[in-house]
Length: 173
Image 1: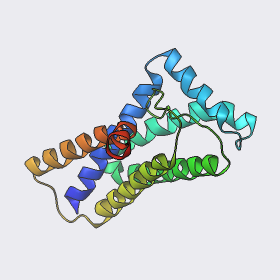
Image 2 (image 1 turned 120 degrees about the vertical axis):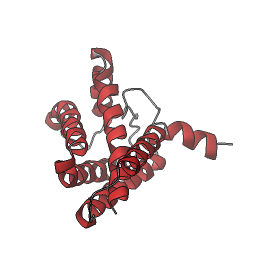
Image 3 (image 1 turned 90 degrees about the vertical axis):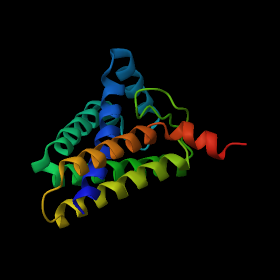
């Protein structure tokens, strides 16, 4: 279970690192992300203004927790809460017919659709598995196993951040 936890943490850390870095890489990127939340009409205006710094801050804190071995369980729990909220929020916007753009990783990947809900739900499941793996881990991991699990997870995480491109390649005619 320790390697499952390490792989999940590596995947989630890569996703949150690229999300934070993408949004915070420049003022223009951050402003574009913040402006994209204006299309989320079910959020009251006050929350739409507060959401960008709160989301980037929560993602950054989650990333740090995922990277600190002693904070693995809280990191996975925070990741689960954020990703479940993202999946529910996107689902709500889609049900309301809102055309919300995905700037999840700091670039415009076009309008969100049901595949964004699937991605966030799968990532939330990964966070739950990481939490369970951390809670059920017995004994230390070997050095080589740790590297393989973390690097493998991070590589998968990097692929997940290109979800929209992968979805287009695999499912578009």
